[in-house]
Image (cartoon, rainbow, N blue to C red; front, side):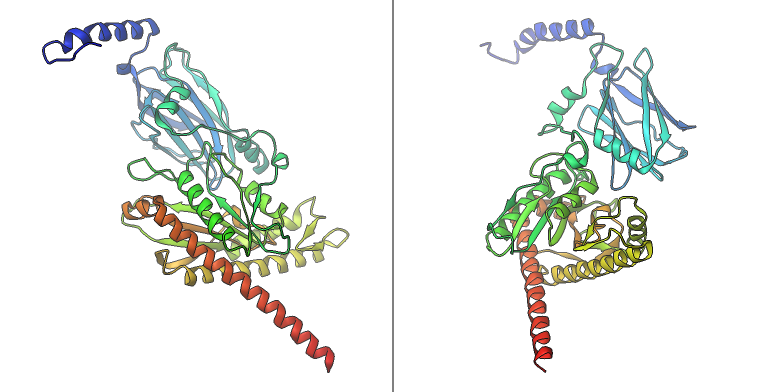
Length: 435
């Protein structure tokens, strides 16, 4: 082994530097040529990107909740912003995804898909062709996952190289339609009479969710850790059963998340997330339930579906008139919304000592994962990953266990009240019959 000294280190390093230079010359690419984004134009459904050097492999994919299209480009770095919006695209954002990858995110106003991605022969320009799509076409694009496009310049970085360097996990995407998903494992006592809680760890796979300010903490990792801690806390009581929508780094379409819970006949659905904001001082947890407007739209959509002759909350909708179906769906969803709001308030009270909530912590929104018409559902933003104190809290074992304890207490209180209400109803009915 050579001995490195101040006098001899350059003598030892020289052959290494010469070898690296020779390799870069052979491959036709060098770090100095890594492309910084010089111009970007969105016009007539085409996004044209120009770089000051050749860039590497690209990948395009669709993300839901909210609807977005994304392009990762290896060997590229952010540069000038995209000023124009066009058609279905509301805005285009850019940022580093690791040290050697540029990520462009297209926020959509309406469903759209990426039709083609083309490189110029010199690898310094990329053209992304977009087209409007139906909701089902967009969902299909989400399920397909990544589409890789090789750079025409040999020796430029690949995304696999960049991700090995920058990500501590393997990228995975689902294969096949939602109906092909197996049911998740159910933890706890083997007693179907006990209530079943499904915990949904938000994001995963090629959608890391929000990032901390320093980029080291990813929402997908935090949510999975909190979901596991919550599962363990609930199972330890012996009073409920628990399932997780995902137990590893995989991507699930939003409808698949609550769809798995419905297939398990879950009694409660809790989706775990971490919030993000431009204001680094924003802090505190919040709980979302379905809004009235979103509920009305979802009820209308369910009533209009061609395959609506199914079982909803124990009621067979088949063979009933459109008006009756609409009424039953609306009544079921209203009852579900009330139960969801009741649980949100219970969680806010029961977990106040272990989870620092925002002042206006119970909020309403149209999140897709909350739209199951016959299953109480809440989405818990456990804190702001963009706030230094919140990020440290939700990433720590102690903070995750505190969140789990708060949710556990709320779940036990929620089901205890339901049991008490049923027993009171039975007793009341018995007294009425005795008269």
